[in-house]
Every structure is written in C-alpha cells, then in structure tokens.
Length: 117
Length: 112
Image 1 (tube, chains in turn orange, purple):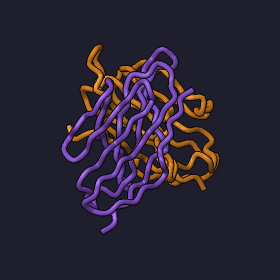
Image 2: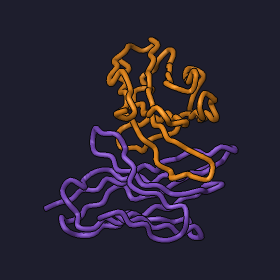
Image 3: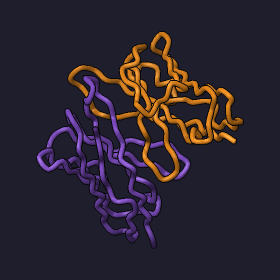
C-alpha cells in the first residue's frame, strides 16, 4: 500500500456541472476525512467517516455536497451544480484510530484540485 | 466553536532555530498536532502532543501547555528544505465524535 490515493488530481469544469472525487485510503485505516484547502489557508474540515458511518458534516458543506463511503473502503465526494466559489484543493486523509490509542496522525492524499470556470 | 491562532509568516536563517506558536480555543480538547506542507504537496504529520510537555523528534520538537491552551513547534538547525507551511491542528470533540481542526498555517521561509 503506497498511501492515500485521490483522483482525479485536477478537474476543470464549467459552473453548474457536477463533479465527483474519489479517495482510496490506506487499507487498514478505519477513519476517513475530507478537507478543502484554498490558497494561503489551512485545510478546512468538511466531513469524516468512521468505517462506513458519516459521523459529522461541517456547516460549510451545503446540500450541494455529498460524501459516501460504501463498505467502509473508498470514499467519494460529489459536488452538484458547481459554483466558482467551489474552486479549491479537496484533500482526503485517513487514519487508524483504536480506542485508547490515538496518536493523532492523519495521512493525506495529494489532493484533487478543482477549478470552476 | 473551535479557533486556532498562529503567525502567518516567519523568516529565519539557515542553521538557526525558529519557534512557531499556536494558541487554541476548543471544546473537549484531546491533543495538538503539527503538520508540514510544501507548496503543491500534501500535509505531512510531524508530531502530536496529548499531554503537557515537550516531544522531540530529531530536529523538530513540539510543546503543549493544556492549562494555557498553547503549543509551539521548534525547528532546530534549519535547512533550506524546511521552507514550507506549518499547521497546528487540534483534536477535539465538539459534537460527541473526535475530529481534527487545522489552523491557517505559518509560512516559514528559510534564507541563506
């Protein structure tokens, strides 16, 4: 396993189109996070999963955004009716978190850069 | 809600020592992490403090004071390759489940 994999790496789309990003976490990791990052800012939390359960969604995540993690493996993040403000790097991270053994380390993918024209 | 504050930019000389501070306000604090991100790259984990005190990993050390809601990252013997953005991140549990919230990052420029 070479780490967290995200695709596509780059996506250019026109306003109003739908886009979907995929994240393949490190195989034994039970937790998966989605973050959004714009230039000069830190990663901004969007949502995360414990296995297949989506535990929390940021209030920043409008109803145009949906994320899934079927069977607790890979995850997809879909953005419907994209807007220019959605242009950002979408980062996926995974971690192995066991009760009483939290080291805090998130393993990030290289990200999917979205440009909405 | 959660908020983290860190300086936006720091410049230091190659071979020197630099300290990047982070203060936070969160609910249900569990620990403070530091991540490094080079331009165009993914954030990579540097350290994690759950308890008060200093954690050392090679040239990097991280400190936490839970009572002061404060931590710092110390980089020693700076190298040009240390030029990057550094993020503090808090693990907290505002809604019953732990999550990780990042600061805006400190851009470190190492100069010869």
